[in-house]
Length: 328
Image (cartoon, rainbow, N blue to C red; front, side, top):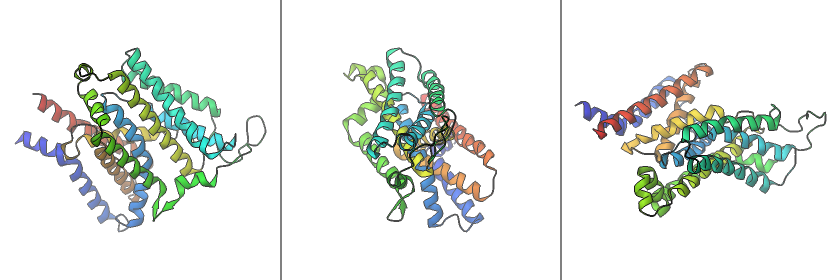
C-alpha cells in the first residue's frame, strides 16, 4: 500500500495539488478564476518559464546551472543600456544581449567539461562573478529613460516603443510574452521529443559513458546545453526589460528559485521521472497560481519565499523518495 501511495503521488500529486489550489482560491475570491486573472498569471509566469527552460536543458544532461538568474540580471541592464546610453538600433539591442548569455554559458561549460569542476561549484562561482559584473557595469544603479549619469550628464536615449511592445503589447487578447512562451515551449518540445539531437541530450544525461561509447561527443553536447541555458536566460532578461521599461538591478535573482522549483515539480508530472518541457511549464503554472492566490489573500510579499521553498522541497522529496524506491 505504501508503494502504491508513493507511485500515485509521484504521478498525480502535482496535478491534484494544482486542482486543490485552484478550488480553494476560487472559493475564496470570485475574481480568481476569471479570464483577466488567468491572463495575468500567464503573463507573470512567462519569464519564469523561459528561464526554467534553460535550467531544464542543463538538468537533461545531468548538470545544473545556478547562474541563470545572474545572467538574466546582466542581460536586463545591458539591454537597457544599449538603448538609454548608446541608442543602438533595435536588432543590435536584441542580438548582442543574447550573445552575452551564450558567452556565460560557454564559460560555464568550459570550466565543467574541460577542467572537470562540478557543475554546482562552477555555476555558483559564475553566479557571483556575473552579479558583480552587472553591478559594476551599472555602478549600482538601475537604468531608465534619460537618467542622470555619474559624470553629471543626462543619458541621451530612452526605451524604444517597438522594444516595449515585446513586454507590454498584446496579440489576439493575450500578452506578447505569453505568445513567446508558448512558441518556445512548442519549439523545445519538438526538439527534445521529435529530433535526433533531443535523444542525444537524454542519452548523455542518462548514461554519459554509454553515450560516449556510442560515438556521442558528450563534452560537446554538454557545452551546447549550457550555452542554450544562457540563451534562454538572455531572452528572459530582454523580456523583463521590455515589460518593466527599465534595467532593474538583480532582476533575475528572485526568479532563480521559482525557475528551479518549476523544473523539479515537472519531474513528477504524470510520472515523467526526468526533466521535461511540459512538466516545467506545469511547475511554473503551479507556482504562479500559488503566488497569485496568496496575493489575493493579502499574504505579505516577504512570506512568498516560504511558499517557493516549500514547493521546491516537496517536489524534491517526492522525486527522490520515488527514485530511491525504484533503485531498490
